Length: 88
Image (cartoon, helix red, strand yellow):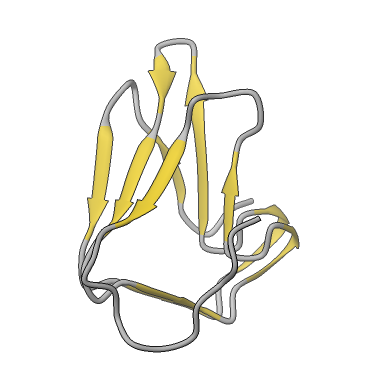
């Protein structure tokens, strides 16, 4: 199970002023699971004032991007002040 599964059919999901906090998932993506289906990959844009805090999962605690897809997650500026995660 995922806290918020996002699958778009070649589309874009824009999230603004959202707070994802204390979400739990057994497998992947405590807050967001971004994937694809036969029709295309999802693009998720995290907009101004969107934060992800203290989410947990078996793997990829806050965000999981489905491997071997063209799924994309971006964070548009301005970003909220606070801690920053180093890109992998």
